[in-house]
Length: 357
Image: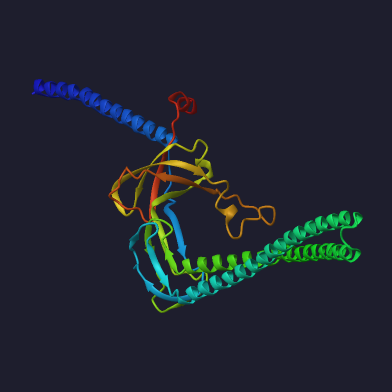
């Protein structure tokens, strides 16, 4: 009996150290795992900057008429994809076609008036040249008559007639030159007046043609039609919103990071992000730029920190993230979707270790 007690006691004493050894090993493994995962988490927290305050944004083009008119036809529907230059809305062009015709006729009339003034100048120049020729001939005749009179070949009355003809030719030349000056003066006024009138009529014609072109409203970019609020027969005013065009292919992510998170964030750094609408799908991108100020600084009512009681609040600064379209082209990112982006900061291991120690 005593022998059996001694044997059982020796077996239990043999099991005690084994259990302690196994417990120590398990504890050591747990400590190692905790150090590994804790260190990994700490390093990741220093190299991966994450926020859930981020959304998808894109260029939204507001489609509005430039002229008042009645809507003739609407060629798109909500959520339809259109290409740049596709016709969206057509306005009734008849009023503007009439204005183009009227402006064209007015310009032709102004051109005809100016052409008539230039014709007067040409006629006056011809008259001056003719008067000069007649004066030259009268001078020749007078000189010949004087020579003949000195040789007593012609009588005195013949010489008097030649002198009278010369004086008439001089007066005719002066009269023709005066008429030319008047015609040129009228054309000179036309350069500042009549020609300016032609230029004015041409400008009115160009404006009428431009307004006529505005009756066809085309898409300014590729995108999706949304918020359509126009139907055929509506009378629309200048600047009235008809629809919006969202260019999803040029979208980006705006992530509002805390100011304390942006110490090492730089443009060009890689970004991975997820979208609530597509669980399990990973997207890639890159930091494009960082806003020049906090969101509060550019709000409608910015804070006045110099007045009243100051309470420090951690500010958020918008970061624009360019989306890599090749990362997941099958899933369309729409404006306003919630995003969880993670900026990957390239930080050397030595710098991380210096932060630890």
